[in-house]
Image (cartoon, rainbow, N blue to C red; front, side):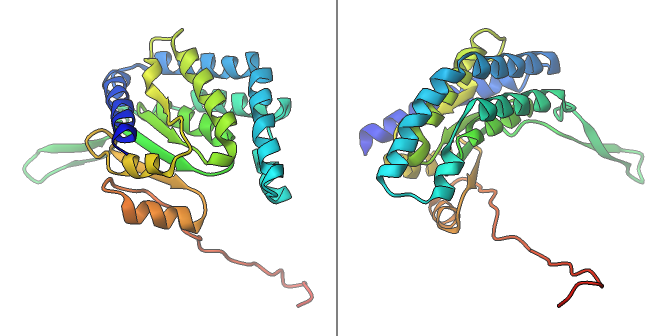
Length: 241
């Protein structure tokens, strides 16, 4: 556990250093980095698919449902979709530095809210490997470093994608340490990550109720979580009840 904690701690220190520099990066620098990351996914798609086949084989061996296996699957079309998603994020307006909610106090003092990066965001997620690319893109665009911890069933796919994204950043002006991946399936790594409040500013869990509850109960870091949601059914007036 101590060795695991040290590894996670070092990951956090690297992410924190990268986050300080990333917060100062301009829009063109971030968009260029996102383009390089997207290109890297396409260029190394065969490598990603090769690693994904290991996860698919493992899922079948563990008798996981066909629905889960479909979520795990990566083919050329899905790699292209991940790359397109990163380019779409690059095309979005840069949120950093945007001024909103301006007002003038009775004494003439002008106030405004300005969007700034949070710092280091930890993402804990299950199943879908595309989350590795999606969340990395969103964090980078908003000026935040990210530490990723995906589910064990997609470990090989997630690791391959994260390594490619980090490698692509070496060609940019953004530190490769802005995208970090926890390279172990040991549950102790999650516990260590949730206690790393010196280096991680926010935790975002993405998955089922069990994961959300576990993260919420164990984290010493602020958590942004989703729940079951509020669902509505609309019945058209001509429908047969």
